[in-house]
Length: 88
Image 1 (cartoon, one colour):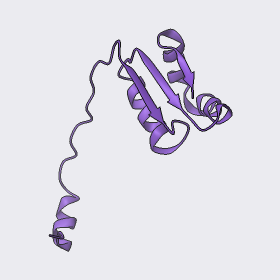
Image 2: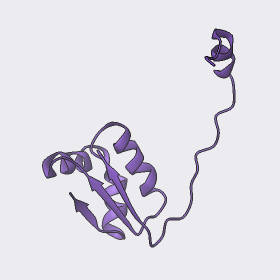
Image 3: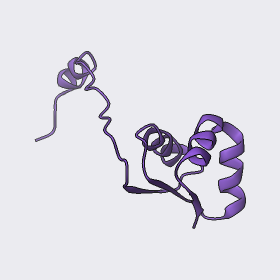
Image 4: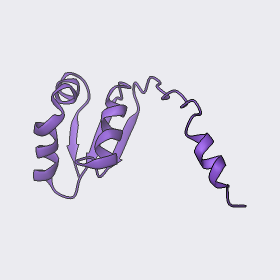
């Protein structure tokens, strides 16, 4: 059943659930499309969760490196301090 117009309006005032955060130590996380958009934001979120390895899967190495240089200064430091960087 399709929700009504008023249901859509009232849903706008509901509380947003908290962002889930947990410790990913020793685990490997692979994020596809990590150089832009949702993949970029997802990779930043996972980097805050202290993964053992964070794999940034991009279409080409140059775009992946541009993303690291463009806005990942804290992420780059985090990755160099602990987990390894991979480009697929």
